[in-house]
Length: 182
Image (tube, rainbow, N blue to C red; front, side, top):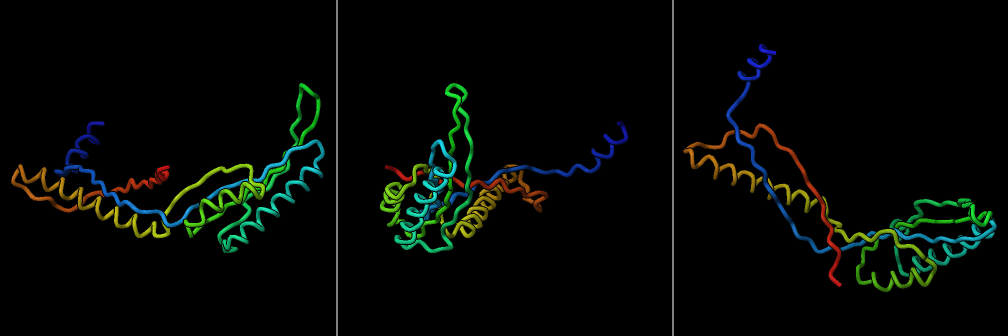
């Protein structure tokens, strides 16, 4: 333990640690929507058929709205037996999940209303985002680095010193998508 402690002391270099923050505010230009069509009943075959009919209507509506094929897809399909122990009966639940990417936000309100009218009975997630996310992330990182450098310069200027080479850089980036105001 003693030798290790002495070796560590020899490797320590004078350093300061600063954090920088970079924010870029972006107006979303697209929205990702996760929806589902769910049906329940006492016969598995009937439940599946009813759900397939509803999903077909939803998919026709999505195509009618001009959403490109590559911008929507089924993400999962399930048919589950749910046993009600109190009533001693089997019920079945069929669910099909669909993920959409809407690149024209002017269609958003009409699309959401139409999806529900067409048969969607679950909306599991709506995320407004930017198609230029990578570009904006790079811009925010550069701003964070400039902020960190300015802080480091402030600290050492009091001591009459200069900032040397960066010893470690870490990225704690976070994406924040606020909901639009009502």
